Length: 183
Image (cartoon, rainbow, N blue to C red):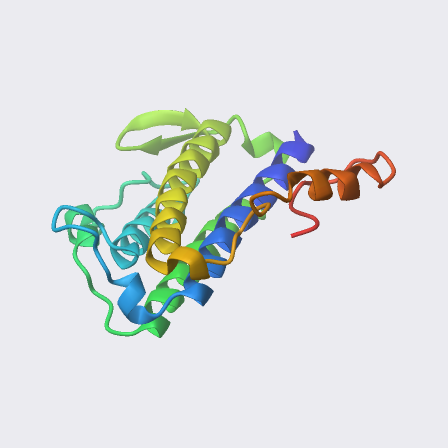
C-alpha cells in the first residue's frame, strides 16, 4: 500500500499540472468566460474545486469533510477580479490537499473518516476526491481548449504524433516508471 500513497500523490500532482498548464495559456478574460448563461467559467470551476479541497482536507482525519463554514452554493459565483487571485486560491487548495496526504502512512488507509456523516476509509475518500477533481479539471482543460482554438498548446500527445511518441517510449529499457515522469 505504500506504492498506493506514492502513486496517489503523483496522480494529484498530475491533475494540478493540467490546471497549471491551462492557466498559463489563458488570460483573465478567458478564465472568466462562460460559454452560456447556464455554464460555469473556468474561474467558477476553480472556485468550486478550491472550496471542496479546503473543506475536505482541513483536519481530514478528525473532522467531517463537509465543514460548517463551507458555502458550496457561493462557489458557483465568480469571486475573482485578477488572474493572480485565482491562481493563489488554486495553490491554497492544493497546498491543503498535499499537507493532508503527504504524512499518511499505510496504517492510516483503513481509518474511517466522514463526509456529510457518510463513513469512508481514507483510501475511499482519497479515490472519491481524485475522481471529483479529475472530472472538473477535465472540464477546465476542455474549456481552455475551446477558448484558445488553434492556439491551444496540447497537454497530451499531439494529434498525428502517437507513432513518434510510442517509438520514443519503446526505445527505452523496460522499467518501473510513472507515466508523469516525462511531463
